[in-house]
Length: 189
Image (cartoon, rainbow, N blue to C red; front, side):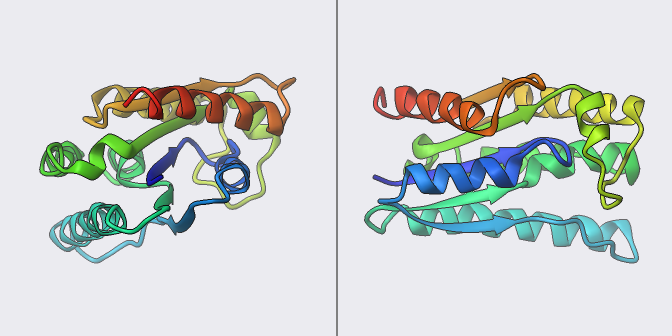
C-alpha cells in the first residue's frame, strides 16, 4: 500500500496530532513527513522561485516514493498553505500552485494522494493561541479558513477529505473520521 497525505488547515487546528494518529493507524507504511514553513526572501521573484521549487520537490518525492513498497509521504502543510497565506499576508498571487498540480495529474502516484483539510471555529483556534501563530484575531482566522476552503475546492487533487470539527470532538474521533474516509476512498480506487 502506497499513500500520500497532504494535511492542511490553519495554525493550531490539530494537523500534527492528526498526522501522529494517521502514522499510528497506518503503521505498515513507512511515511516520510515533510513540514513546510514560509521562509521570507528579499524579492517576490526569488520567493516565487523558491516556493515553486520546494513544492515541485514535494511532488517529485511523492512520485519517487510510489515505486517503493508500503511507503508514502505525509505533508504537514504544503503548497495550498502558500495559496492561503500568500495573498493575505504577503500580497502574492497563488495561481502557480494550481499550475504546478496540473503537471502531475496523469502520474500514477496522483491516485494515491489525498488532500485533507481540517478546520474548526476561529474561537477554538484563538483559545489555543501559543504566541507563534500568524494570526490570533478571529476575523483574520476566519479569512484564513475561507481561503483554505477555496484553495481546497480549487485543488486538482482528486481525493479530498474536509472535516470541520467542533470543540466537543476529541482527537481520536477526528482521526477516526479521517481514517474511515481515506479507507473508503482508497479501496474504491
